[in-house]
Image (cartoon, rainbow, N blue to C red; front, side, top):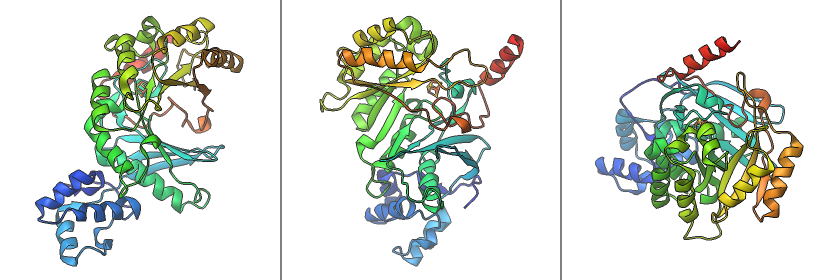
Amino acid sequence: METLTQTTKINLLGLDEKAMQEFFHTLGEKPYRAQQVLKWIHFQGVSDIQSMTNLSKALRDKLQDIAEIRIPEIAYESTASDDTHKWLIRLADGNCIETVYIPEKERGTLCVSSQVGCTLNCDFCSTGKQGFSRNLTSAEIISQVWVAVRGLSQSGTLHDRAVTNVVMMGMGEPLLNFDNVVSAMNIMLDDYGYGLSKRRVTLSTAGVVPAMKQLREVSDVALAVSLHAPNDELRNVLVPLNKKYPLKELMAVCQDYFKEDKRRHIMMEYVMLAGVNDTPAHAKQLITLLQDVPAKVNLIPFNPFPSTIYKRSDDATILRFREILMAAGINALTRKTRGDDIDAACGQLVGQVKDRTRRSERHRKSIAQAQ
Ligand code: SF4
C-alpha cells in the first residue's frame, strides 16, 4: 500500500462525480471519464493510474503527471473479541484518525471520522478530550471507506463481510466540516463509488442547526442527533454546543427535517449515564420534547474511559427508561456495546491528535491535580 507523502499532485481519491467531471473538463475530456475513474478507484480499489486500462495510454500518462490516488497508511489495526475491527490511519501530517467496522448478522457498519479530534468537547466523550487539530479533507474521509473495503475483502477472517452501512459518527462533528463531508458522502452514495442507499449512510450531529438546514438542501442521507439530555440545563453541560443552539431551535429543525417523506425518522442518540440523565423523570421529559418530532431513540450504554466522572447506567435502569418511551409510542432501542476491549466503542475513539486547542494538555493537568 502506498505511503502518504505531501505532494502537489491532485488527489483523485477525494473527488466526487461533479468535481471529477470538472477536473476532466479542464483536461478537454468527456464527462464519462469521471465515471470510469471513480469506478476504478472505489469499485475496483485501484490506486495505480496505469492500471486503468479503459483509458488510453496517452491519457494515463497525462494523468500521472498531474494527479494521483493517495491512500493513507494504516498505522495499526486490531480486531476485538466480538470481531469489531479498528484501523488507526496515519495522515500525511502525522495526525492519526480512527475508523471502526462493526459486523452484524445482516449488515456491516463502518464508523467514519470527519475531523482530527473535535472542537465541541462533549463532557462524556473521549474524543472531545483529545482537543482538535484540523478538518479532514474529502480524500481523507473517503479513504477510510477505501481502506476498510479493501482490508475486509483481503482479510482471511473478514472476507465474507462487506460495508453495507456508513455512519459519520467517528471522531469529530461532521457538520463543522460541511463541504468535505458532503463530497465524501456523495462518493459513498454514487453508483460509480460505493453505491450505498441514502438510508444506509447516516450523518450524526451534535446539533449545528444552521448546517442541518443546509444539509437538508444538498443531501438526503439519514440523520442522527446526539441528544443525550431532555432539557437545556443538563444538555448545556453534556453537549456544550447546546448553549449556542438550544433544544427549542434544534427540535424545530428536526420537526421539519424529513417533511418531504413522512416515513423517515431522525435517530436520537442518548447515552445512558448513571444518575445523570437516566431517571423516569428524564424519560418523561424526553417524551414531551419529542412529541412533534419524527424520531426514534437509540439508548447507548456509556463506555467509560480513563478520567471520566461518568458511569454506565445499569441494565435494569436502561430497560425501565426504554419501556417508558415505548409505552408513550416512541420507538426506542438499546445499542449493543461493541468493541470496548479495543477502545473502539462509541465515544472511545481518540486517534493521535496534534492538539491545537491545548485542551488535551489542560485535561491531563486537571486529572493530575485531582489525583
Ligand atoms: S460526542 Fe461527537 S461532537 Fe461531542 S465531542 Fe465527541 S466527537 Fe465531538
